[in-house]
Figure 1: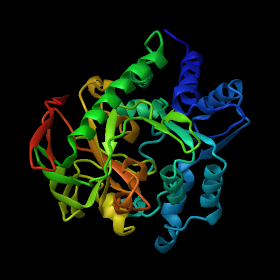
Figure 2 (figure 1 turned 45 degrees about the vertical axis):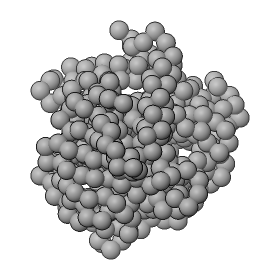
Figure 3 (figure 1 turned 30 degrees about the horizontal axis):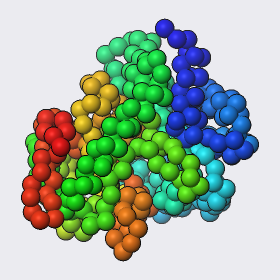
Figure 4 (figure 1 turned 120 degrees about the vertical axis):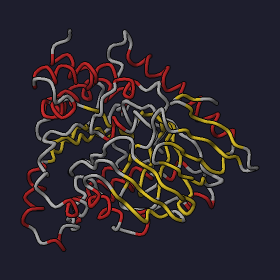
Length: 402
């Protein structure tokens, strides 16, 4: 078994290597939370070994957000000082690399906060980050990093030390660090996903239909919608893998053609908020007109009221049961992991590059938010309908059938 230092170094090498693909003489920004100093330092070391020009690390402290939500006036919670956004835009203009980490450090910190307020303050997320990503100005990657509190959330029946060790083992397998050559293993998996994306593109689908327990939903696609997998390329010609792990193929839907009801198959934990459990959403003519949940519905109701596009879909992603995350059988309370365990939808902003250049790209959804929620399982069938009306089974029992 590897030591903790060796485990951290292995994640750092993935982050700056096949993940963000940090280039010689490139600036790297690292976004971390207090408690993630060890991985931030390991990433800095790995990046400088690759020839990075400068590594800029910023830390987010959720306790500061907690204090704001407890004491600040409600009408001020949407305010973000302009220099925070300007920094993100400057990072984009510099063509920097970006690395960040997920894994809730204090998952119950916001339990005493009104859920509606949690949807008003989106930090650490910013609108400018969405802008920079949409413009493909940076090569970036998000990865998981285990901690004890997160481990107890995922494995509440185990002693903290045992839960932490099990979470580490799961993360190592999910990141393919258990393979003799993790990079080669990722190249093989990404090639599979790119093959699926190509087959979906060739079908020229007009819409998708989801059917399963509590779900009967139709999602229209734009004529220019293009299916993309985890490997992307910046405008500077740098290939990178935005999410590690990555198990999805995704595209931008038509934000005006979504109708029906959908029931989430996993809990949702937006970073900086509390969990949303048992989510149910009803769409009419593209808009989420009813949002209910067993817990936390007010968080999404508040977020989707933020702007015109926030209550519409910006992403549709399909994931098969070959995902190592799904095979683990665990719910991770991490969008990064849970969205790569099951097919998902995202409320809010679309990735413009998931629509072919042309008039359809202007029709893709625009919003200050992008929130993924999981809707796939072995019990949810996904069927494609081509532009000439032919039905094509896509996922059955969680497996690809195309």
